[in-house]
Length: 127
Image (cartoon, rainbow, N blue to C red):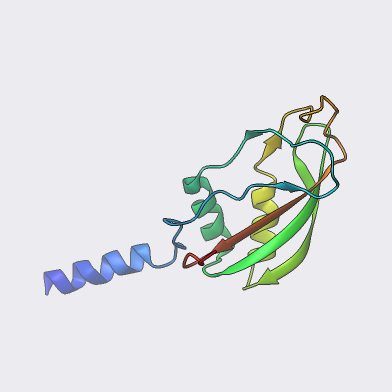
C-alpha cells in the first residue's frame, strides 16, 4: 500500500510540468536583416520549465515577433502562430527573459530590431 501511495504522490508531483529533457533553448532569429545579434542573457531550462508551469502549458508551440528595446530586451511581442492553450503568452514572456548586446555584429545599435522566437513544449519533435 505504501508503494502505491508513493507512486501516486510522485506521479502527481511530476505530471504538471512539461518535459524539456530533449528541448533546446530557443534561439531568437532576427527578421529584419542586419548582422547577427549576440544574446548576453538567456534563461536556462529550469527557468523555462518554471515559467511554463506558471502559465499552465503542457504541450504545444508558439511563434512570437518582438522589438528590441533600448536595454536590449525583446518587448511588444505579437503572437504570430499558436498551437495549444497559453503557448503564445508563455513564449512572449519567455522572450522577455533574453537580452541582446547593445550592438550587433556590425557594431550597429540593436534597439528597434525585430526578432522572432519559436518554442514548443511537450514531447520533442523530429526535425
